[in-house]
Amino acid sequence: MTGIRTETQPPSVQGNTPITEVEMEGQRKETYSRMIARRFLKHRLAVVGLGILAIITLMAIFAPFLAPHDPYEVTEVFEGEPSAEHWLGTDQIGRDVLSRLIYASRVSLVVGVVAVAIYIAIGTIVGAVAGYFGGWIDMVIMRITDIFMSFPFFMIILVIVSVVGSSLTNVILVLGLLGWPSVARLVRGSVLSLKQLDFVKAGIALGISTPRILFGHILPNAIAPILVNATFGMAGAVMTEAALSFLGMGVKAPMASWGNMLTDAQSLSVLTDQPWLWVPPGVMILVSVLAINFIGDGLRDALDPKALK
Amino acid sequence: MLTDLLHIEHLKTAFKTDGGEVVSVDDVGFRLKTGETIGIVGESGCGKSVTSLSVMRLLGKSGYVKEGEIWFNGQDLTKFTEDEYRRIRGNEISMIFQEPMTSLNPVFTIGYQMQEGITLHLGLKGKKARDYAVEMLKKVGIPRAESIMNEYPHALSGGMRQRVMIAMALSCKPKLLIADEPTTALDVTIQAQILELMKSLRDESGTAIMLITHDLGVIAEMADKVIVMYAGQVVEEADVFTLFDNPRHPYTQGLMKSIPHVDSDPDERLTSIQGTVPSLLAMPKGCRFNNRCQYAEERCRQEQPLLVTVGEGHSVRCWLAE
Image (cartoon, rainbow over all chains, first blue to last red; front, side, top):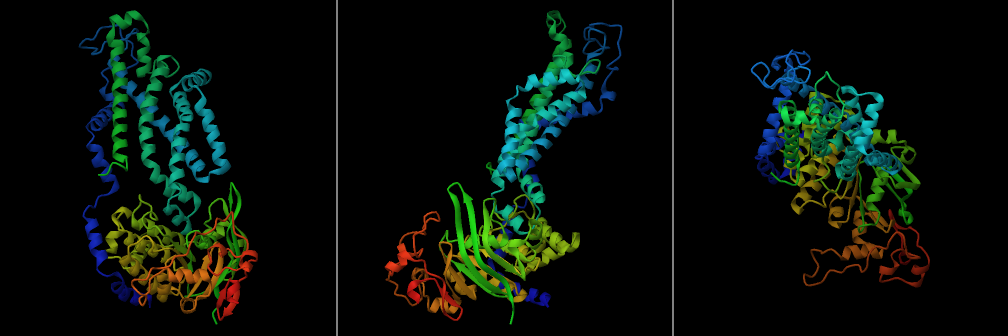
């Protein structure tokens, strides 16, 4: 019965205007993701950054095929200058610098990606819960966040790493477990403003459960700042790992990381006479961090809702 | 005789604020039968929306129903747990809001949002849910319903979005539809279309409608009976014809005079009710309307009037009406 009425009702109701309205709107048919991609591609430096990061990623994945030597193999040439055999020379105990440089990109990327993934996950959940429920839950969570943020970040990492021991896993865990407060604040702020919007009320009025409202409806709207934060966080994590390794508190030899390769430059004679030992890893850190930051810049501009079209 | 679908009795809704507890709906009651439409009118801040939100229990953290009963379909909603409430929201009672521009989630397609409620309450999945959603969109007069399913809300105009909201609200065949100023944010031609649509859908499905508005034109168009609210209280209740023919409360009369009539003198100025709704924290003694009422007497300033019946289905809260 309803079916028949359905067919007869709409024409009398709709009039003519809505059709033209929709067709006019339909012209700029573009999905959200495609619009973001177009805006990102306009940002030249970001595209360059993405290219560099892609190269570094490929380098990390295919390290065993790209590296001319075994990065752990000790050869008879100590502190050898760059040559046809060893393009970037060898280090103090005779390992090929180029091979180590290539393998070290794995460490940096793993630290950057995994540590950031851990703290983004924690920060997002904690911040979303605090922002959505408010009241005493928010109060308790944000005070804990404040406490975490008041720690001298680098010192606490140094202390923890020296207590639990330095290894790649520990560096990742420490960075991941300490990095969440700033994300939590960011997400809390977004959720606080998003939860006031009508679609949240409409969702509740539709009988959608609270977790689904929070994680399925509110958070997808907050994804842009989180993504930008994650990108910059990745650059930060690469830097922190390098710094920790440089200080001997991060990735330990014989495993290669750009940071611990720089350790050699602590001696003045190396600094002045053997630039092949410290310039390449230094350049790699610089280039990768710059590339990631450019990507972050591009993403931020592309995702900015205020920059129309 | 039909039993009442919704029967609100002595509803008192309060909000906790820094300045203490504020009672924003005080002793409101009415009955609504299946297929009937009740209009709730009043100025901003009179408790119209809070009344409707109380029925849905969407009062936020600080608001709560302090006293009274909300009988819906033979069950007292005030005794429901949050879980029980979730089951009837969007299913047996749905709601459409004033602002269609922000009532849809901007990052999901219309289809996704339509199907969510359909899957949740009707248990339809995948293609079946999609087909049903398309059918609902066609029912509310959306052209190219199939392709609209893949559009994001920003590609739709306000009127279209409100149609989508109505389609979502009605997709689970609710017994009661609460419409909180559904046409206020739309331009006049679209308003008429939306009202027309709501009327036809009501006649088709027998859904009862609780219509909140400050527009007496909308009331005249849609409602079977009307309650006029002032400062959190019902000041007059009547069927729509009685109310327009014979408004008894000075506030209702004032509202009537403030809109133009076809047969009124074009040079005549519309009258307005002086002053504003009193703050809920500082209610005047006696009748709440006394400081704005041109007929106020000494008694009005001292004693609060009760809602008294003055005719069949017609009651007024005014000393002068007796």
